[in-house]
Amino acid sequence: MKIVYHAENGMDASLVKDLLSSAGIHAEVRGTALQGAVGEAPAMNNVKVWVGLEDYAEAREIVTGWESAEIIIDDENMFDEEDDYPQEPMRRESHLVREVLIAVVIVLLFVAATIEF
Image (cartoon, rainbow, N blue to C red; front, side, top):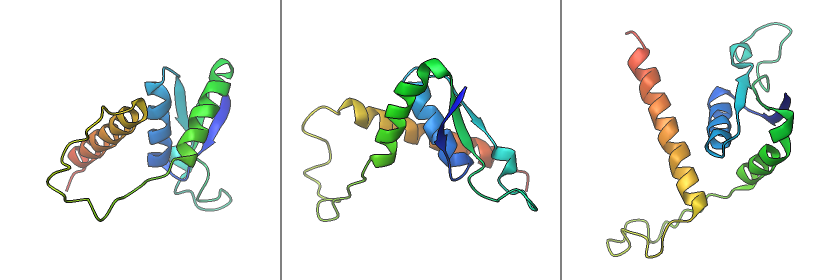
């Protein structure tokens, strides 16, 4: 296996893992237990996403697209009632982003449900 992405934290790594999984690439997140380590281990950049050697080139291309993606917010038309629905079909990338966001919400709901107060 080979490292395809150095994540800032576990959530960041999970997003990339889910992105790769949606493209049919098996990925593993490693190093989440080291996030809060004190002492000799640095507190950041320990979380990494790993893929098999046979999937590395394709995974690297997907991750590069993820890293260079730009979020565009149109503040002027954000609440226009006329533009509630897109006029053209969603592109594949839009579906992928939606799936990743849904996965994040599910993970957050699961974490919230397992926390004991």
